[in-house]
Image (cartoon, rainbow, N blue to C red; front, side, top):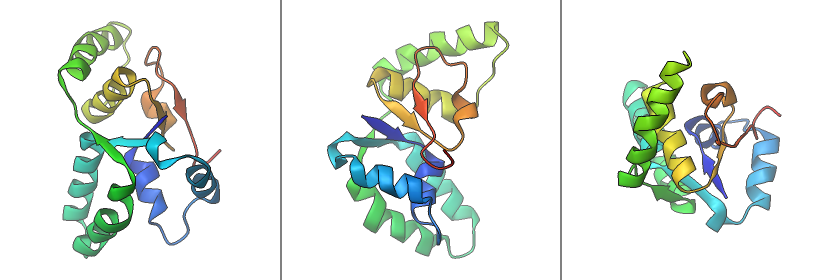
Amino acid sequence: MYLLDTDALSNVIKKSPSARLLRKLAETPSEALFTTAVNIAEILYGAARVPHGERYLSVFKEKVFPCLTILPFDLKSAEIHGPLKAQLEKKGLSKSEPDLMIASIALRNNLTVVSGNVRHFAGIPRLRCEDWIGG
């Protein structure tokens, strides 16, 4: 069961998406593919910042979002997030708030994060992360 990070979602709609990512997605049942409301917010933000963002967003709405279960940042995710953030800060490991929220949702739902930016999630205890984009 996999949680697709924003960069993995964005890669899918590129003119030349990662062949490895497309292969792995084709091999994975759609019931095993998830993303989060946090990732959707990042995509909406990105679309709002670029020219022709509405076209970009329409591709997500028509072809990407319907293929995924979108998970919320809920109370159980928050209960993971707070102590995890404090634990990482004590170790001197700071993470962006969105990445930490995404990681908390993945941990809460026992999902492996799929990201081309695995370093963003490095050092988070118990979190499984795989790079399907670069290798």
